[in-house]
Length: 237
Image (cartoon, rainbow, N blue to C red; front, top):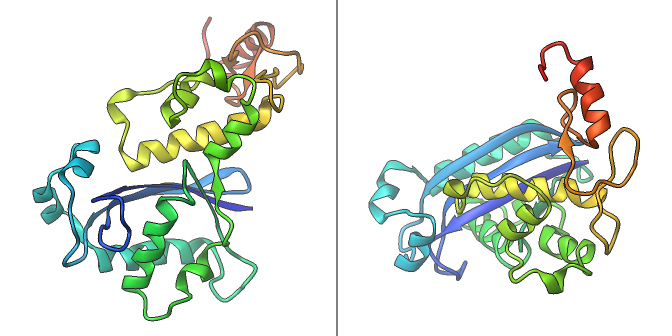
């Protein structure tokens, strides 16, 4: 299975008149991160720019002059996608995944391909038409906890699930895509509708987020963590 955890930073909210100035993500194939990308984009000619939108990512219009033009990024991104799939095989496509992806990022990505592709169906040749909204998945898994959570932004859910968050990196598309992938990977380890992680080794419920095993990075209980520490010659107590 091929999934791209994707995020964008844009010059506004309307994909018809605004554009992306950052496109980033992780490419995961069969559960393994095989590639990452982080494109800074000089938007298309005539693109409308909202100062409020740029403020979110701490970006200035002058920064665009240092970035690749949009059509250049379209070539680079297409080359990267072709590296990991057979473009002519209609069954070989990527699933797109992200936070509120269908209602926002997908629309900007579609507009991006339409402006820079000779063929209208290029987007559909690369991606399945059913993107994964990680926010919707998180809502289902945390349905019992949702009333206790004042906010349900990506950073709030990531912290609630025990992901260590570097707040200085928030609102960078690359970091937000990474956080989204972390949330997506943790959710299946929760009991549906009742957040409860289980030890990867002995399968007992974890009282909290547990500890990260030095052997494989999975979440484990204290007892299994100690065993893994002893089993790893490079890890000291």
